[in-house]
Image (tube, rainbow, N blue to C red):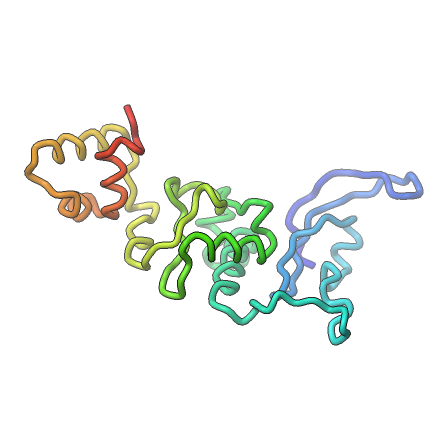
Length: 199
């Protein structure tokens, strides 16, 4: 399995100290993060999810070939895999995924209950530097998602106040302000309605 990080030393059942670590299961149908003794984790080919494949006891959630599963799998890849070409902008700068979403089914259920369709993409919001978790994610159009990048967010209270002042003049619509500051209309709405960057 893929080593993620060391967890320190624990006593095994014989009372002998043993080094433990976190490992990412390489099975793309699983991608589970598990804790194992270092020697075992480096040796194992999976977390155990492949045991029983082909038997009547093997359980699959049935979502492996869906777009939603693919989105979830890619989130984990850019967070946990240093070889991923997007890792430096995600896991490499401290962004992670909540424990609940380490399993696909809770992520799937949250998505379906929060407006997911095959035309939408996941967006970390209101904190674009925050983690993937229910309180900081939503489903939006690709255009909205592209606007909410590291370079296209309001980064200071001064800029937010400037937007409020321009809006209060009556000379700018929220759409015009969104285009002027290269952010989503939703971001402007939250600022002018004091739902974010509140004084």
